[in-house]
Amino acid sequence: ESRIRHSIGVANFLFAYAKSHDWSKEETEDLYLTGLLHDIGYIDNPKGTDHGRLGAEILKRNGLNAEICELISCHGRYESIKERYKNDPERLFQVYRILEYLQIHFSEYR
Image 1 (cartoon, one colour):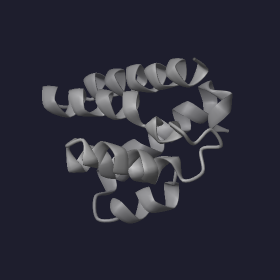
Image 2 (cartoon, one colour):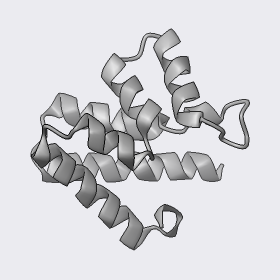
Image 3 (cartoon, helix red, strand yellow):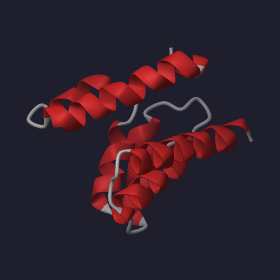
């Protein structure tokens, strides 16, 4: 139940962030969905070992958008995010701002 509340909270935050930064309706919805599903890799994996990759595999097998699967696969790994967006400084700065906000306001991100 706490993981569900966490995922809903992440989804709501990402939705609000996207809306406040004038992302398109489709991008905003995709980001919300990413938040909802980002921890699905904990299914049958209570320790969460490699849960991002496992979650992405589950979602890929079920036909979810490849970009969302990639975000879920790499979530929580700032080094991979920096590598992925190294040629997009604006997007990387947005990611940094999201992480900074989460670390300030949510103890589980410290």
